[in-house]
Image 1 (tube, each protein chain N blue to C red):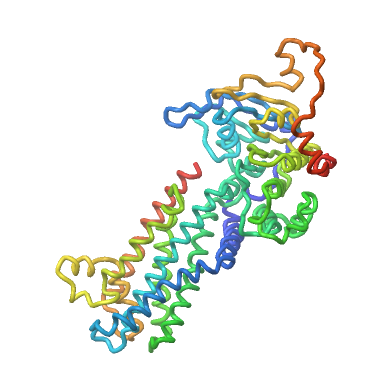
Image 2 (cartoon, rainbow over the protein chains, first blue to last red):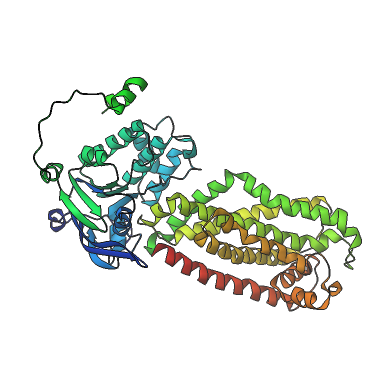
Length: 268
Length: 253
């Protein structure tokens, strides 16, 4: 396929899940990181891959974004095979890795222009300005990304991933290392993405994050998906809830926002 | 993917060039050590060195230029290493771009940055009395050899840039390269050295390259040194390119 050719979803693809993984295996020498992962992600949904550190979440994302080859199993993204049609997969996706992949020496705006030009889009400047506005970075746009706070850097990172409107976006631990306010900013960005019809696969080790954002949650444990379902379905796995009366204590989060001001939360 | 190779490489080169122009200190640092060495040799040691040549700065400038390149390319390894550590490398690799463009951008930037440093060093050499009557063709040959040498060492620098585990590791490989001109004809005639050292000095790449550039500047016939120099440059370039490409494949597979 020629580069730059857009990838029109055929009627066939629309029926298919945006991401479809069967029997994915990957080992590093002796260490079997993935031992047969199966999952399907519906188009336009937010899917959370939940797991502790070292569970293999990043390995799954790296295979799906063509950065790593699987030892066994198949994976299709936007209808394309990640091994055989890597170029088409790359046309269809955007990856926001675990560490904010922004160029620190460039300004925020230059980072966006860079990605727009690499995606061969017209008027990269206008695209950059639009995204800066959308992610409340307009004022910071002329500053080097190195001067950004963790949350701003993440927002810039996610904004860079949106350029070219890829139908599938991978977010690998998007809020790790962020303070609570920045985390909420990122959550808002992710929710907005899904509203626009983008499929989002995010990995996280925070249960709260999965609960907050995801339409569907899968738990990756020791290289396998051990549970996969909606939040309601997952909750049914436990015995029915008991009714208890407990005096409601404010959570630390309530305290935090009461003290620092509710601005970040009001936006939500 | 071929269709966008040049466009993508140009965009990525623009990015890495900004890294250079926004930290001019790297160019200054690259140029300042060779300049200091040049001043040291010309004004301190030079008086005691008998090269049989009228002007010592004329004699040793070619060696200084090679040292400039050898210290300049360590920044290429450094920049590449930082890209890989920072995650921007993975972003590029997961995008629909010509993947080799990422490496070529670093190589072209290295070439440009080194040429700037070389010009700085050369200007200082002019100030302290370097003179050449070289014609256009000889100049073209000098620039050609320097470009070839820079490309060869740059591809060599790509290997630690891709494979190093630490920043120090990424740039440490340059030290022996910076040292190599000292055991060559760059600063003293090899005839003064004891047997084994002389044998090494006369048969390592720097001597033939230095001799060729020196002869070109002095409007002397270059003899067969030029072919040995070209052989070394092209040989290092080809081997380094193959090894770098292999490391790159391993990185992105």
